[in-house]
Image (cartoon, rainbow, N blue to C red; front, side, top):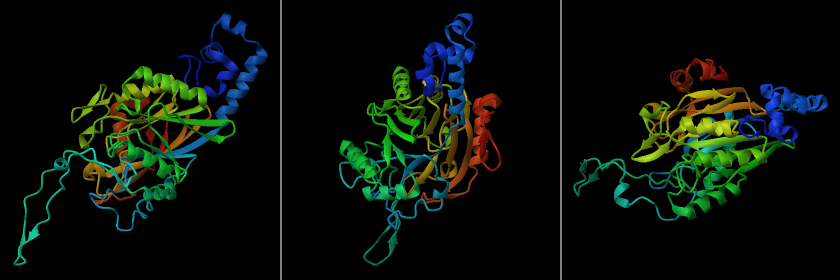
Length: 395
């Protein structure tokens, strides 16, 4: 994946070519480079490149997941059916989701009690048995989520193999909540990414390794806003793997946050990064796929240097925790196939619609939404092509 900054996405052949060899192979090099590389070496390099281009790795990704929190109510069946209507599309060597909130039974919430009032009072009864309607309680201004650690089994049963912890709810119940989350995931053989400096790795085959790095605009995570750090850790991941997947928790939130601006975003006064600049910088540094989450709505997708960027996959599960009205109730799962050099081969978007409780089922207009947003934000030269059945191809 590295030849300095000369070529992106060919980590698997760096050891053979070196920086100069890569440049000569892909951009013509010039007479000096041609003379420096023997015909036998060039032939070997070409064979290795063709072999890598013949390799395939398929993965699936979804957006934001909250399986319930005791303060707002847990599913009546203990969460066992949360994913059953949508898990058939969660297939691949990697199945990834953004876990909003820790898996923990205890700890102290980061939110003061006066900022976490319920959505509305349902009324009380007088001694005479008459129901007296009360005025709606003040809307919460701070949200802290926590889900029982046992719910990690539902993630495993649905097919998830890795969860992102680089988001604004990871520390809702402090460092102890993070530790509990990691332990619960490990107990079900689910990897995690996101903590600062962490590069998660796994093998698809003996000669095809994948690294995943999660970024967010928070001190405990790999920095989304420090582009030097983005480049460094992405390059480091590329030295350890053939394919590098980057995730970003970035952008504003809400129904008005579906567009990808050409500038940094904020939400409630909090810096949320410049997702467009970040994603492209990551790919230039060696990332082969960028998956976005955090805005809680779908955003467009583009192909940049033959690599796919999905800027936000929206909400996926939000049991009595995430808003589901309008665009907030439309999400998707994304399945992508890339070759051994990281280039996009194929993809498919599977629409998901959340009901009023935040439980997903197939449906909704995710395909047309993402198609329109992609063209609006990236134009025909970079916007992905999405067929009516959700099939994704490069422009």
